[in-house]
Length: 180
Image 1 (cartoon, rainbow, N blue to C red):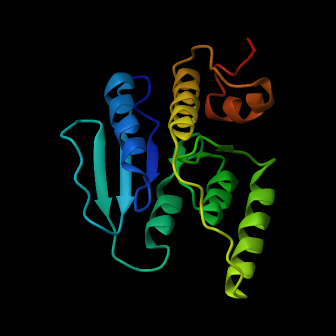
Image 2: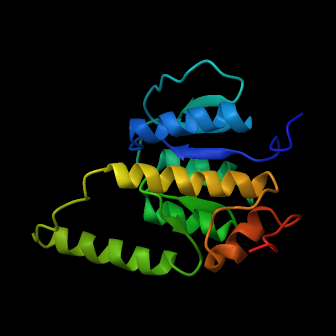
């Protein structure tokens, strides 16, 4: 049995870019870690013992609620949904955006405030411009952050800055990041 058997990566898959899913599929096979994509739409996933998709009923935040109910402390959720990120962090799990941003207790409240401010502006008729296009640097940032987290889970030297030491130690409390 793999040392990663107790951990999972959850994906808020409705809006996750295909290139990010492809990175996750390769990582699942390489590291032998379960990845669960959750969506209210049917998803085609490659045949694998490590990759699965769960289709939840349609409705507002149904996929988010499913992920929150299932995720365990120390697991990873891939999402750009800031209210979901807040709930994930409260469960002592990690949240990583498809753009490669690792959310922590230290930055999630600011992200939520910014998201709420932009939503209020949009509701009042202000054009906030929408999200930035997905770029090659976003893809690289995501792949690097994912690799760092997976290396930490394997007890290897993670490639994350020391400022994230406490967050990654929560993911792998046995090994910690004493070598940073």
